[in-house]
Image 1 (cartoon, rainbow, N blue to C red):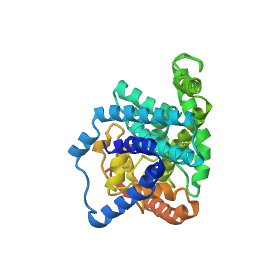
Image 2 (cartoon, rainbow, N blue to C red):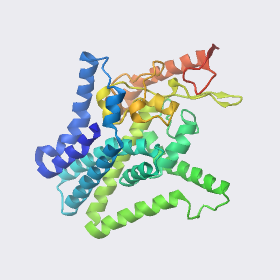
Image 3 (cartoon, rainbow, N blue to C red):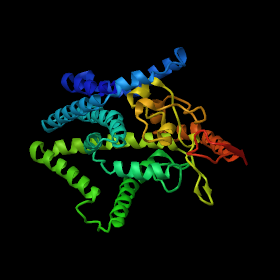
Image 4 (spheres, helix red, strand yellow):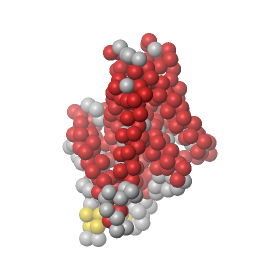
Length: 355
């Protein structure tokens, strides 16, 4: 699994310290974008085979990743409890947040879609490490149903900046998950305070985890845990922002237009793609959530990000640059969608009629 490089790299930075503290930041901000740029220039047509990806994303590799991330996070919390300098706080919160947000949450995203209850539980354990367990409910039962509509808080409308989107998602994401869960309970004739309320389970798990850290390691470790969680969630929501910005399905008499390849931004950069379990092949993920990361395809009809996946995630943090690169592209996609309406299936390969 390529994502194993994250706990290995962060573990190395924790052990060696010094200049090595900055390795995870340099990797995400510089090395991966440069590798993607090199692939675009010298091997633009290379893509890993499905067979190779199935080996890289084998179930045992997710278990190994979870064990490694847990070990590294625990090590970082122990170091925080013993006292850190200002530079160490910044470097190691960033390093751990990059690990738990870039690799940890994307691994969790893959796992919460799996049919195996054991794999889903493993995904939830990774989400617990960043205090974002509600994501499983909001993403699987909300985002996938309402993607590219005003009903989905995770689909940023044209013109919204990432800081606005992030602040909104910190409230709207948990609220959407709570509504979904209470509706599920109501259909079963159960009140919101039922012992079957998964949101209450998640709240208890996350509160218990923070309480355990406080008792065993003290307030500095709790502060470190909260800060790395915010870093990780910031990266997750930046990815959400990038993948759906400005794309909208249209209303019809019978409901929303079907999800099509034009409703998610795709990237075919193999380096960053492998590091995030092909999450960058996002249109196909929405076409069939049962398809595993190794089997995700790139659709020719999907709008493409102008720069590599990692690069665009960081461009999103600079609103004027983001809007200069993306707003006109999003308008062109919308115009093309209006000119050709998909009427069959889920929108992928369906018959089309001209407006």
